[in-house]
Image (cartoon, rainbow, N blue to C red; front, side, top):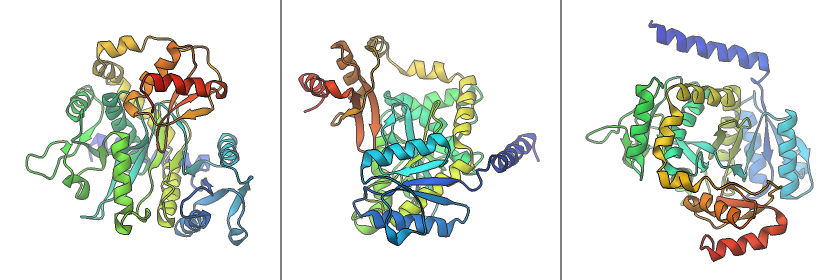
Length: 385
Protein backbone atom coordinates (compact mmCIF):
# COMPACT_ATOMS: atom_id res chain seq x y z
CA UNK A 1 0.00 0.00 0.00
CA UNK A 2 1.41 3.41 -0.96
CA UNK A 3 1.79 6.29 1.48
CA UNK A 4 -0.85 8.27 -0.43
CA UNK A 5 -3.42 5.46 -0.04
CA UNK A 6 -2.61 5.12 3.65
CA UNK A 7 -3.16 8.86 4.03
CA UNK A 8 -6.53 8.72 2.25
CA UNK A 9 -7.71 5.79 4.39
CA UNK A 10 -6.53 7.55 7.55
CA UNK A 11 -8.42 10.72 6.64
CA UNK A 12 -11.60 8.74 5.96
CA UNK A 13 -11.37 6.92 9.31
CA UNK A 14 -10.72 10.20 11.11
CA UNK A 15 -13.90 11.67 9.62
CA UNK A 16 -15.91 8.63 10.78
CA UNK A 17 -14.64 9.13 14.34
CA UNK A 18 -15.32 12.88 14.19
CA UNK A 19 -18.90 12.34 12.95
CA UNK A 20 -19.55 9.85 15.73
CA UNK A 21 -18.26 12.25 18.37
CA UNK A 22 -20.29 15.12 16.92
CA UNK A 23 -23.53 13.15 16.91
CA UNK A 24 -24.01 13.57 13.15
CA UNK A 25 -24.57 9.88 12.45
CA UNK A 26 -28.30 10.45 13.12
CA UNK A 27 -28.98 13.91 11.69
CA UNK A 28 -32.35 15.64 11.79
CA UNK A 29 -33.20 17.11 8.39
CA UNK A 30 -35.89 19.76 8.00
CA UNK A 31 -38.38 19.61 5.14
CA UNK A 32 -40.50 22.58 4.09
CA UNK A 33 -43.82 20.79 3.90
CA UNK A 34 -45.77 22.98 1.50
CA UNK A 35 -45.44 24.65 -1.91
CA UNK A 36 -45.29 21.59 -4.17
CA UNK A 37 -47.28 21.60 -7.41
CA UNK A 38 -48.15 17.99 -6.52
CA UNK A 39 -49.54 18.89 -3.08
CA UNK A 40 -48.27 18.64 0.48
CA UNK A 41 -49.03 14.92 0.61
CA UNK A 42 -46.33 14.27 -2.00
CA UNK A 43 -43.74 15.99 0.21
CA UNK A 44 -44.79 14.08 3.31
CA UNK A 45 -44.87 10.74 1.50
CA UNK A 46 -41.30 11.50 0.48
CA UNK A 47 -40.42 12.12 4.14
CA UNK A 48 -41.96 8.80 5.19
CA UNK A 49 -40.12 6.99 2.44
CA UNK A 50 -36.78 8.56 3.38
CA UNK A 51 -37.11 7.50 7.01
CA UNK A 52 -38.14 3.97 6.02
CA UNK A 53 -35.16 3.61 3.70
CA UNK A 54 -32.64 5.15 6.12
CA UNK A 55 -33.36 4.38 9.80
CA UNK A 56 -30.56 6.78 10.83
CA UNK A 57 -32.43 9.72 9.31
CA UNK A 58 -35.06 11.77 11.15
CA UNK A 59 -37.20 14.22 9.18
CA UNK A 60 -38.70 17.32 10.79
CA UNK A 61 -41.66 18.55 8.73
CA UNK A 62 -41.94 22.36 8.81
CA UNK A 63 -45.36 23.86 8.15
CA UNK A 64 -49.02 23.29 8.93
CA UNK A 65 -49.54 19.81 10.36
CA UNK A 66 -51.62 17.32 8.41
CA UNK A 67 -53.42 14.91 10.80
CA UNK A 68 -52.77 11.90 8.55
CA UNK A 69 -49.03 12.41 9.08
CA UNK A 70 -48.83 12.55 12.87
CA UNK A 71 -46.18 9.82 12.69
CA UNK A 72 -43.74 12.49 11.49
CA UNK A 73 -42.12 15.04 13.76
CA UNK A 74 -43.43 18.56 13.16
CA UNK A 75 -42.30 22.13 13.59
CA UNK A 76 -45.69 23.77 13.19
CA UNK A 77 -46.07 27.19 11.54
CA UNK A 78 -48.91 29.21 10.02
CA UNK A 79 -49.72 28.33 6.41
CA UNK A 80 -47.41 31.03 5.05
CA UNK A 81 -44.22 30.61 3.00
CA UNK A 82 -42.41 33.38 4.90
CA UNK A 83 -43.25 31.80 8.26
CA UNK A 84 -42.06 28.38 7.10
CA UNK A 85 -38.80 29.82 5.79
CA UNK A 86 -38.20 31.77 9.01
CA UNK A 87 -38.85 28.67 11.10
CA UNK A 88 -36.37 26.68 9.02
CA UNK A 89 -33.70 29.36 9.40
CA UNK A 90 -34.20 29.45 13.16
CA UNK A 91 -34.06 25.66 13.43
CA UNK A 92 -30.79 25.63 11.49
CA UNK A 93 -29.32 28.42 13.60
CA UNK A 94 -30.28 26.72 16.87
CA UNK A 95 -29.04 23.31 15.73
CA UNK A 96 -32.48 21.69 15.99
CA UNK A 97 -31.91 20.48 12.43
CA UNK A 98 -28.53 19.83 10.84
CA UNK A 99 -29.69 20.19 7.25
CA UNK A 100 -32.79 21.14 5.29
CA UNK A 101 -34.61 20.42 2.04
CA UNK A 102 -36.55 23.30 0.49
CA UNK A 103 -38.38 24.10 -2.71
CA UNK A 104 -36.84 27.56 -2.86
CA UNK A 105 -33.94 29.32 -1.16
CA UNK A 106 -32.46 32.74 -2.07
CA UNK A 107 -28.80 31.74 -1.92
CA UNK A 108 -26.36 34.64 -1.82
CA UNK A 109 -24.07 35.03 -4.80
CA UNK A 110 -21.17 32.63 -4.37
CA UNK A 111 -23.31 29.77 -3.04
CA UNK A 112 -24.40 27.00 -5.39
CA UNK A 113 -25.81 23.47 -5.22
CA UNK A 114 -24.28 20.22 -6.45
CA UNK A 115 -26.88 17.85 -7.87
CA UNK A 116 -26.80 14.09 -8.40
CA UNK A 117 -28.46 12.08 -11.17
CA UNK A 118 -28.78 8.42 -12.09
CA UNK A 119 -27.41 7.83 -15.59
CA UNK A 120 -29.32 5.34 -17.76
CA UNK A 121 -26.60 3.42 -19.62
CA UNK A 122 -24.97 1.82 -16.56
CA UNK A 123 -27.12 2.96 -13.65
CA UNK A 124 -24.19 5.00 -12.37
CA UNK A 125 -24.47 8.10 -10.17
CA UNK A 126 -23.14 11.37 -11.57
CA UNK A 127 -22.69 14.65 -9.70
CA UNK A 128 -23.57 17.82 -11.62
CA UNK A 129 -21.60 20.84 -10.47
CA UNK A 130 -23.67 22.91 -10.33
CA UNK A 131 -27.50 23.05 -10.57
CA UNK A 132 -28.91 26.11 -8.73
CA UNK A 133 -27.42 29.32 -7.39
CA UNK A 134 -24.00 30.20 -8.76
CA UNK A 135 -20.50 29.99 -7.32
CA UNK A 136 -19.56 33.24 -9.07
CA UNK A 137 -21.13 35.88 -11.30
CA UNK A 138 -18.13 35.38 -13.61
CA UNK A 139 -18.87 32.26 -15.72
CA UNK A 140 -15.27 31.04 -16.05
CA UNK A 141 -14.58 31.54 -12.36
CA UNK A 142 -17.76 29.63 -11.54
CA UNK A 143 -16.63 26.61 -13.57
CA UNK A 144 -13.30 26.48 -11.72
CA UNK A 145 -14.94 26.85 -8.30
CA UNK A 146 -17.49 24.17 -9.22
CA UNK A 147 -14.61 21.71 -9.47
CA UNK A 148 -13.55 22.54 -5.90
CA UNK A 149 -17.11 22.29 -4.58
CA UNK A 150 -17.93 19.17 -6.58
CA UNK A 151 -14.88 17.43 -5.09
CA UNK A 152 -16.02 18.37 -1.59
CA UNK A 153 -19.50 16.88 -2.13
CA UNK A 154 -18.06 13.70 -3.66
CA UNK A 155 -15.70 13.28 -0.73
CA UNK A 156 -18.55 13.83 1.76
CA UNK A 157 -20.22 10.84 0.08
CA UNK A 158 -17.12 8.72 0.59
CA UNK A 159 -15.50 9.09 -2.87
CA UNK A 160 -11.99 10.09 -1.81
CA UNK A 161 -10.49 10.56 -5.29
CA UNK A 162 -13.38 11.66 -7.53
CA UNK A 163 -12.75 12.02 -11.24
CA UNK A 164 -14.15 14.98 -13.10
CA UNK A 165 -14.72 16.32 -16.58
CA UNK A 166 -16.09 19.52 -18.06
CA UNK A 167 -19.18 19.58 -20.24
CA UNK A 168 -18.11 21.02 -23.58
CA UNK A 169 -19.89 24.36 -23.18
CA UNK A 170 -18.74 27.95 -23.62
CA UNK A 171 -15.59 28.60 -21.58
CA UNK A 172 -14.83 24.93 -20.91
CA UNK A 173 -11.40 25.02 -22.56
CA UNK A 174 -10.33 28.09 -20.58
CA UNK A 175 -11.59 26.58 -17.33
CA UNK A 176 -9.76 23.34 -18.12
CA UNK A 177 -6.49 25.23 -18.59
CA UNK A 178 -7.04 26.96 -15.24
CA UNK A 179 -7.72 23.64 -13.50
CA UNK A 180 -4.61 22.11 -15.06
CA UNK A 181 -2.60 25.00 -13.60
CA UNK A 182 -4.00 24.19 -10.16
CA UNK A 183 -3.17 20.51 -10.69
CA UNK A 184 0.39 21.35 -11.75
CA UNK A 185 0.70 23.42 -8.55
CA UNK A 186 -0.32 20.49 -6.36
CA UNK A 187 -4.13 20.57 -6.14
CA UNK A 188 -5.22 16.90 -6.29
CA UNK A 189 -7.60 17.01 -9.26
CA UNK A 190 -8.18 13.71 -11.02
CA UNK A 191 -9.46 14.19 -14.56
CA UNK A 192 -11.59 11.57 -16.26
CA UNK A 193 -11.89 11.12 -19.99
CA UNK A 194 -14.71 11.16 -22.51
CA UNK A 195 -15.75 7.76 -23.85
CA UNK A 196 -15.87 9.27 -27.33
CA UNK A 197 -12.96 8.97 -29.76
CA UNK A 198 -10.18 11.30 -28.67
CA UNK A 199 -11.08 11.08 -25.00
CA UNK A 200 -9.94 14.03 -22.91
CA UNK A 201 -11.57 15.80 -19.99
CA UNK A 202 -14.05 17.71 -22.20
CA UNK A 203 -17.29 15.74 -22.10
CA UNK A 204 -19.86 15.35 -24.88
CA UNK A 205 -23.56 14.83 -24.38
CA UNK A 206 -23.07 11.06 -24.76
CA UNK A 207 -20.83 11.10 -21.68
CA UNK A 208 -23.74 12.21 -19.51
CA UNK A 209 -25.72 9.10 -20.42
CA UNK A 210 -22.73 6.77 -20.11
CA UNK A 211 -20.36 8.64 -17.80
CA UNK A 212 -16.70 7.89 -17.25
CA UNK A 213 -16.39 10.47 -14.45
CA UNK A 214 -17.82 11.07 -10.99
CA UNK A 215 -18.38 14.83 -11.46
CA UNK A 216 -19.51 16.79 -14.51
CA UNK A 217 -18.72 20.51 -14.39
CA UNK A 218 -21.15 22.94 -16.02
CA UNK A 219 -22.76 26.30 -15.34
CA UNK A 220 -25.73 26.22 -12.97
CA UNK A 221 -28.37 27.03 -15.61
CA UNK A 222 -27.21 24.15 -17.82
CA UNK A 223 -27.03 21.94 -14.74
CA UNK A 224 -30.57 22.91 -13.80
CA UNK A 225 -31.88 21.86 -17.23
CA UNK A 226 -29.96 18.58 -17.05
CA UNK A 227 -31.42 17.84 -13.62
CA UNK A 228 -34.93 18.27 -14.96
CA UNK A 229 -34.26 16.04 -17.97
CA UNK A 230 -32.70 13.23 -15.93
CA UNK A 231 -35.40 13.44 -13.26
CA UNK A 232 -38.54 13.74 -15.38
CA UNK A 233 -37.91 11.90 -18.65
CA UNK A 234 -39.70 8.77 -17.41
CA UNK A 235 -42.92 10.72 -16.83
CA UNK A 236 -42.77 12.66 -20.07
CA UNK A 237 -41.95 15.77 -18.05
CA UNK A 238 -45.11 15.62 -15.94
CA UNK A 239 -43.16 15.45 -12.68
CA UNK A 240 -39.72 14.46 -11.41
CA UNK A 241 -39.70 10.78 -10.46
CA UNK A 242 -36.03 9.82 -10.37
CA UNK A 243 -32.93 10.98 -8.52
CA UNK A 244 -31.87 13.06 -5.56
CA UNK A 245 -32.92 16.61 -6.44
CA UNK A 246 -30.73 19.60 -7.09
CA UNK A 247 -28.37 18.87 -4.22
CA UNK A 248 -26.81 20.50 -1.17
CA UNK A 249 -25.52 24.06 -0.97
CA UNK A 250 -21.81 24.88 -0.93
CA UNK A 251 -19.79 28.08 -0.92
CA UNK A 252 -16.92 29.92 0.68
CA UNK A 253 -17.75 30.55 4.35
CA UNK A 254 -21.18 28.90 3.93
CA UNK A 255 -21.99 26.58 6.83
CA UNK A 256 -25.60 25.61 6.05
CA UNK A 257 -26.48 22.41 4.22
CA UNK A 258 -29.67 23.36 2.37
CA UNK A 259 -30.76 21.10 -0.48
CA UNK A 260 -33.15 22.09 -3.24
CA UNK A 261 -36.01 20.18 -4.80
CA UNK A 262 -38.40 21.35 -7.51
CA UNK A 263 -42.06 22.16 -7.10
CA UNK A 264 -42.52 19.28 -9.58
CA UNK A 265 -40.46 16.77 -7.55
CA UNK A 266 -42.30 13.56 -6.72
CA UNK A 267 -42.04 11.53 -3.52
CA UNK A 268 -39.12 9.36 -4.75
CA UNK A 269 -37.02 12.47 -5.49
CA UNK A 270 -38.01 14.11 -2.19
CA UNK A 271 -36.92 10.96 -0.34
CA UNK A 272 -33.68 10.95 -2.30
CA UNK A 273 -33.02 14.62 -1.53
CA UNK A 274 -33.51 14.04 2.20
CA UNK A 275 -31.15 11.06 2.17
CA UNK A 276 -28.58 12.96 0.07
CA UNK A 277 -28.72 15.87 2.50
CA UNK A 278 -28.29 13.58 5.49
CA UNK A 279 -25.35 11.81 3.83
CA UNK A 280 -23.37 15.00 3.20
CA UNK A 281 -24.20 16.25 6.72
CA UNK A 282 -22.74 13.02 8.09
CA UNK A 283 -19.77 13.50 5.80
CA UNK A 284 -19.03 16.96 7.25
CA UNK A 285 -19.61 18.86 3.99
CA UNK A 286 -18.94 22.45 5.18
CA UNK A 287 -15.58 21.41 6.67
CA UNK A 288 -14.66 19.55 3.49
CA UNK A 289 -15.49 22.65 1.43
CA UNK A 290 -13.21 24.74 3.63
CA UNK A 291 -10.49 22.11 3.32
CA UNK A 292 -10.77 21.95 -0.47
CA UNK A 293 -10.60 25.75 -0.72
CA UNK A 294 -7.50 25.73 1.48
CA UNK A 295 -5.82 23.11 -0.73
CA UNK A 296 -6.74 25.02 -3.88
CA UNK A 297 -5.55 28.24 -2.24
CA UNK A 298 -2.11 26.76 -1.67
CA UNK A 299 -2.05 25.83 -5.36
CA UNK A 300 -2.70 29.46 -6.36
CA UNK A 301 -6.49 29.56 -6.69
CA UNK A 302 -6.72 33.33 -6.18
CA UNK A 303 -4.15 34.03 -8.88
CA UNK A 304 -5.76 31.58 -11.28
CA UNK A 305 -9.19 33.16 -10.81
CA UNK A 306 -7.71 36.65 -11.14
CA UNK A 307 -6.23 35.68 -14.48
CA UNK A 308 -9.66 34.69 -15.80
CA UNK A 309 -11.14 38.19 -15.35
CA UNK A 310 -10.52 40.77 -18.13
CA UNK A 311 -9.08 44.12 -17.06
CA UNK A 312 -12.21 45.99 -18.18
CA UNK A 313 -14.39 43.86 -15.93
CA UNK A 314 -12.06 44.45 -12.98
CA UNK A 315 -12.29 48.20 -13.46
CA UNK A 316 -16.09 48.05 -13.56
CA UNK A 317 -16.15 46.22 -10.23
CA UNK A 318 -14.40 49.04 -8.36
CA UNK A 319 -17.69 50.92 -7.90
CA UNK A 320 -18.59 51.02 -4.19
CA UNK A 321 -21.98 50.08 -2.80
CA UNK A 322 -24.18 52.61 -0.94
CA UNK A 323 -24.58 52.03 2.82
CA UNK A 324 -26.06 48.59 3.47
CA UNK A 325 -29.74 48.26 4.40
CA UNK A 326 -31.99 45.21 4.91
CA UNK A 327 -32.79 43.96 1.41
CA UNK A 328 -35.89 41.77 1.50
CA UNK A 329 -37.71 42.65 -1.75
CA UNK A 330 -36.74 40.61 -4.82
CA UNK A 331 -36.64 41.64 -8.48
CA UNK A 332 -36.85 38.75 -10.93
CA UNK A 333 -36.49 38.47 -14.70
CA UNK A 334 -32.74 39.16 -15.02
CA UNK A 335 -30.22 37.20 -17.03
CA UNK A 336 -27.53 35.57 -14.90
CA UNK A 337 -24.82 37.22 -17.00
CA UNK A 338 -26.29 40.66 -16.23
CA UNK A 339 -26.92 40.27 -12.52
CA UNK A 340 -23.77 41.99 -11.20
CA UNK A 341 -24.02 44.76 -13.79
CA UNK A 342 -27.64 45.32 -12.73
CA UNK A 343 -26.62 45.66 -9.08
CA UNK A 344 -23.95 48.20 -10.00
CA UNK A 345 -26.49 50.09 -12.12
CA UNK A 346 -28.60 50.55 -8.97
CA UNK A 347 -25.54 51.52 -6.92
CA UNK A 348 -24.72 54.29 -9.39
CA UNK A 349 -28.18 55.79 -8.72
CA UNK A 350 -27.68 55.55 -4.96
CA UNK A 351 -29.87 52.48 -4.41
CA UNK A 352 -28.53 49.73 -2.17
CA UNK A 353 -28.90 46.31 -3.82
CA UNK A 354 -27.57 42.76 -3.52
CA UNK A 355 -27.44 39.90 -5.99
CA UNK A 356 -28.72 36.43 -5.19
CA UNK A 357 -29.74 33.24 -6.96
CA UNK A 358 -33.12 31.68 -6.38
CA UNK A 359 -34.39 28.37 -7.72
CA UNK A 360 -35.98 30.06 -10.72
CA UNK A 361 -32.91 32.11 -11.57
CA UNK A 362 -31.05 35.26 -10.54
CA UNK A 363 -32.67 37.96 -8.42
CA UNK A 364 -31.69 41.43 -7.25
CA UNK A 365 -32.62 42.11 -3.63
CA UNK A 366 -33.40 45.67 -2.53
CA UNK A 367 -34.98 47.40 0.48
CA UNK A 368 -38.78 47.25 0.34
CA UNK A 369 -39.22 51.03 0.20
CA UNK A 370 -37.19 51.44 -3.02
CA UNK A 371 -38.58 48.42 -4.89
CA UNK A 372 -40.53 50.40 -7.49
CA UNK A 373 -37.72 52.90 -8.04
CA UNK A 374 -35.25 50.05 -8.46
CA UNK A 375 -37.49 48.30 -10.98
CA UNK A 376 -37.84 51.53 -12.95
CA UNK A 377 -34.05 51.99 -12.96
CA UNK A 378 -33.44 48.46 -14.23
CA UNK A 379 -36.16 48.79 -16.87
CA UNK A 380 -34.65 52.08 -18.15
CA UNK A 381 -31.32 50.35 -18.54
CA UNK A 382 -32.78 47.26 -20.25
CA UNK A 383 -32.01 44.77 -17.50
CA UNK A 384 -35.68 43.82 -17.12
CA UNK A 385 -38.74 44.22 -19.29
